[in-house]
Length: 187
Image (tube, rainbow, N blue to C red; front, side, top):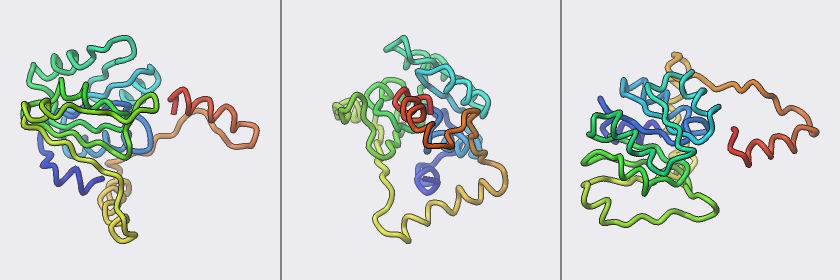
């Protein structure tokens, strides 16, 4: 993903991260911090917001009880909107509401909610002169390895820190609990 981030022209920007923890997004936040941008993390679970805070998100927005969480993101950017959204959860349509003019949305893998892939009205994209970039990985082994060069270097230098959860799932007996936590989006 570092290749995509650098190709998006990230310099100084407001970045909105829905679901700030998970296989892709926790490190997305670290990458954006390495580029010295302001990070706004959103999540519907308090524990995820706390992890985002611990890992240095500048602001955290609880989107569990409100369909208007994007207004808070707009307020936190002085009405300008965020410049880049990492979306792993299928909130592209809502994120367009807090996206700046000429902003970018990076949707990673197959983002969808409640077993439905998201549909976005293209007039919203056109009116903001925005870009939606899809990233699913690369089709060849060589191309798959290349984007990891930057993140691996960031890991080695300490710019990216791994998330270690306080709960271990390390036996066959813990599979049920792990699946329940995964289903409840606790990890």
